[in-house]
Amino acid sequence: MYLGSHAINMDAKGRLAIPARVRDTLLEDCAGRLVVTAHTEERCLLVYPEPQWQEILPKIEALSSFNKVARRAQRLLIGYACELQVDANGRVLIPPTLREYAGLEKKLMLVGQGKKLELWSEDRWMNWLDDSEGEGEMPEEMASLSL
Figure 1: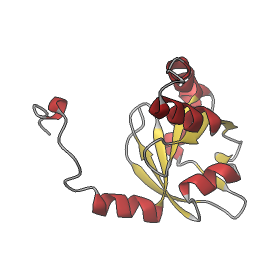
Figure 2 (figure 1 turned 180 degrees about the vertical axis):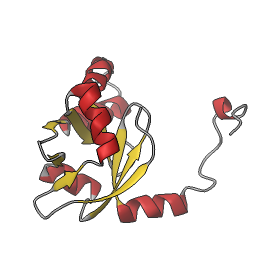
Figure 3 (figure 1 turned 30 degrees about the vertical axis):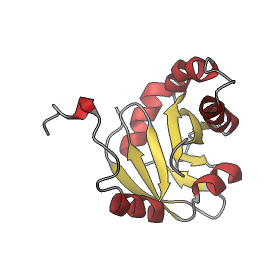
Figure 4 (figure 1 turned 45 degrees about the vertical axis):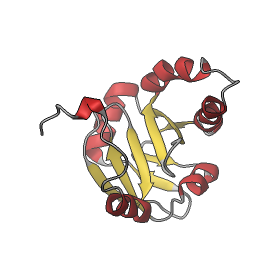
């Protein structure tokens, strides 16, 4: 399970070091094989351990290509998907197209989301935190959630 948020840096070549705690879990879960793709609603990246991606890929492919919203999701999720391998130094190289999509520069945030991670530019992450208060209605499933 991927939890917590981690402030990390990306070098000029687009490489970022995965924090040790996250890296250890990734190595255990998928031998460091990842799939990184575009988020469909936010300008950030989704980072899946390869087995998790293999579970959801058929569901994405099964969406109707006649529905505009579903087709957009397919184009973003599958069209931007990139297989990556954590190298011996615990780093991954984020391709330029994905860096551009998410506006990634030097300072990043890697945010655990249970079975996957999100990769954000630090500025976008902080703006999202500031702007997300009171956005939309609370889903019914959250009404009984006690934290």
